[in-house]
Image (cartoon, rainbow over all chains, first blue to last red):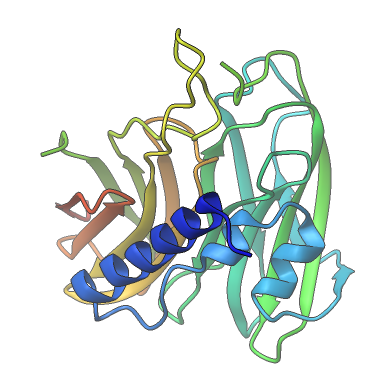
Length: 151
Length: 103
């Protein structure tokens, strides 16, 4: 049986998809909602169709050792490897692990910096998904003294 | 309409470093208001960047990107005078595009 809650959730997903496709048809692929709702790092990679991640020295994650304010944690992800398709930033213990997904083209370096919210101290991951589907990652522990996701 | 973005693009050698500061609430959907009800998620979920009109970068973001998001990336083969454009779109369908010149 389908509960009302499920029905609402499904209609929200469909509405989201329609908005994405209707307004921005030039994007190569739609916003991957499954990946952004996945709870764990492994689930995110599965939703994106990437293989099992392998730790690699060629992928670099940057961030503070201790973040005083979990609402603004500066993170960087980069790699010098050729043939990168996506760069992902993930925080393992957030309600949803995936922070951001960058689609790399030949015209940009696979080197991004942004700021993330973190609910608690956690490992953060930078994952590079290569053109052949291989996933390489680097991780780093960030300690948070004040969470950024609670209210 | 949301506030404008601040975009700085600086060329060094063959590479331009672009720094973007967007103005957005980025509500995570995890917080509760004073009545204990969840505040609905409201965040940027698509970002794209152009170099002289050509799309060079697209990104998908979740609600865990911080408020008033910052983004930095490097464009290969850019020089002073080139145009860099950045567009974001949030999950309520609002969007904004701003452009800057590489210096």
